[in-house]
Image (cartoon, rainbow, N blue to C red; front, side, top):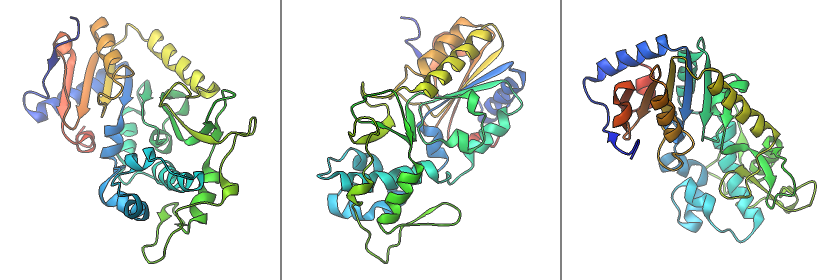
Length: 305
C-alpha cells in the first residue's frame, strides 16, 4: 500500500544530514513548516516534573496526579476549582514565554524565505516569536481563546484579562516580565470566586477552552481565514521547489501534518521532506530519496543549521 513502509531514523553521518538540510533550506522556493508538540517540548514547555510541581504542587498533593495533562482531564466537583487549575495552566503555557528561544531560531532560518506554518500546537509560540500572523494556521485552537461549552454560535473570546484575574485571586503574583509567581511559602487558594467563572454572552452557558477535543470545537472566522490562506499557499506553489519541514510531529493526529506532507512530497519530485524529531525521525520508503531525517533534540539541531 502506498506510503505504508517507513524509512528508519536518520542514517549516515549526522553532520552530513545537517549540511544537506542547510542546502535544502537555501535552495527552496518555499518552506512549509509543520509543527507539533515536540517543538514546544524542545523549547522548554514540559508538562511534568519540576515545572509541574512549581505551579501545581497544591493540586498534586490533593488529587495525586503528576502532570498537567492529567490535571486538565480531572473531573473537578466545582467550576470554581476547575477554573483555578485551568487558569494557571493557560497562563504559564500561553502568556509566558517559552524557557528556550527555539521558535526564534526557526524564524531566523526562514524569515527571508517564502514560508507558511501549520501547527497543532495551541500555545501561541509562533506569534510570540514574531512570525507573520497571516502565515500561520493553528488547526487545533488556542489556549488564549474561550468558546461556548455547547456552542450556540461560532465565536471565540480572548481570555487574557479573565485568566489574569483568576490567577491573582488564588494568591499568585505576576512579575514585571510577565512570569507567574507561585509562592511556596503561602497557601494558595485552589478555587476562584464564582463571579469569575466565564459564561457565554449569548446564552449564559459556561465557557470552555477553544481546543479541539470533540465535535463541539468552534472553528471561528479567524480559523477559516487561516485555513484558506494555507490552502492558497499550497495551491499557488504546487510545482515549485518546496521544503516540507516537519518539527516535532508525532502520531496523535498524523492526518493533519505528517501524512499530507508525505503525500505532497511524493506528488512533487522537486520537493523535499525534512523530519526533525527526538525519536521518531523517519519517512516512507517511497520518498526516501527526497527526505532528510534527523533524530535528536530539535533545538540543538536547529542551532547547527
